[in-house]
Length: 206
View 1: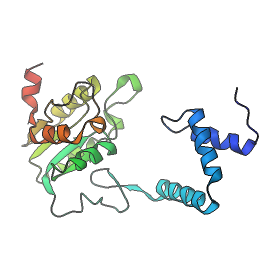
View 2 (view 1 turned 90 degrees about the horizontal axis):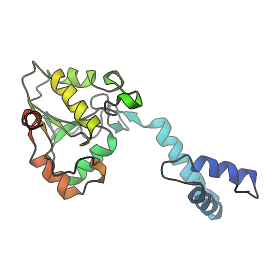
View 3 (view 1 turned 90 degrees about the vertical axis):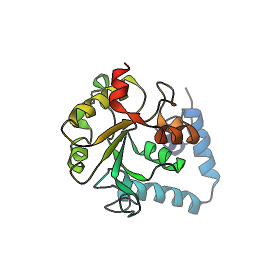
């Protein structure tokens, strides 16, 4: 077991090790690095993290993170509000935006249906998505992970959209099965958005 010359250092390592992908050795290196920095730099880091956690809010329309009631995308009059791209989380919005190939708006579900993890439809932002449909929406793009959970969520949404006069599409399968959007290169992801296909044809081919 690792021993520490300072209880304060150990406490810092314990907190840093709670971050995703950070083991205790990496956490120790980070803590020692911060210990060498001047106090103003460390305070700036702490203040920025605290402000992020306490002041960032969720867009009331699409559930993207935002500094205002409406995120910059929803508030942009140049975005095509008739097309909504449905994604799992905020990282997917960032990935698609980085392609520069999409001009519509988004809806962040906040997860995907996964009974094994105790996540059902009621835990996702599906009702708020349904409430947006009467506002002139013509197309829904399903841009969820190409996993069993993603496909389950796609099919659930497909059934929820029955009765609405809109086109339902899904991103082209240039993305490998099981891949997360955030790990897909921008060119492939951009082409998948541009070459999206009707969702019903995906169901028929299964």
